[in-house]
Image (cartoon, rainbow, N blue to C red):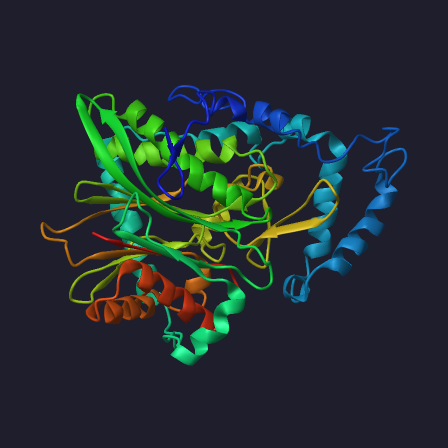
Length: 450
């Protein structure tokens, strides 16, 4: 069964991976070519097609049309992309000429890497690779936690402060919503609807999932924040509503012999990819998901939302690393998948010949980037102490961390906890503080007592 954002369950059917083309197993991942055909994402018609491209180019797009298209697209770009990006017109030429070659479903089968490998095979192998060695899993968990710790230490203070009572009265225009889900009363969540978009594109999750590993039945807490983009919260809501079922299936598949770090690590990796290939829309979403099994917190992060834990002494420990394109490891991942990057943004041209860009290196959905953006998450594991009653888990979208560091947000949470604020109140205070510190994004915060 599938857990939605409020802990309710609904059945999305047994063919959840077939929607992506074929059922993923440990030996046979979903076919990206079938996925492309299923999503009907042919970008341009071949030259000579009498229907033209969306009726704009009778006879089809041909080489002599490209300079005019490049000029049109460049003139429509925001200054934040154009300024200092000297190679952008060259990239547009490269993209549009590729689009002339063949319809998308055929093109992606034919594309090769610089070394001559079929790009389709590279993407499938990278998305669905499985690690079988226990020692290698331990090394990967340690390496990622080291990267997270370094990320926290490198952050600069941003003068993040709590909103005053008079400032809070001004936020009615943002329609701040908050709740403490009945399914998990230890969780508090709040979100604001940005004035720029009118409707928030974020979603959040608080649910319990049940699964069997070996002969043992487990009940686990699942919380998350999902920062959507490009489709009015369709992808973020889809992710929040379906991750429970998809992850349950993968946990049981990899946990046939019992609970282990290897089983949970691989299940989280592949569940996110499954979820992404299931999604049939045009937009995308980040996903910061925390699975609690006993005293172990498993954090799977796709994108630039963030999680941290704070103890009863006020010590803040960041648990996830933002997937940003100014990090060399994330940039190389995009390039290996055939993506184009300008000024730390992935760029392409969509089926309507419009410029599209994305500022995070990993996401669910975002199929317009032709497999260059993976949903495969970075994973960390954090084991709580025997008595963790004073600990709180905090998960927020980047609308919070754009204006506050992990330590600053943690200090706010700690000060409110000492005043006996509940989790719903704390989450709302985080949202209000992000607003008063001039965040221009949708803002979501989820706070969980551990």
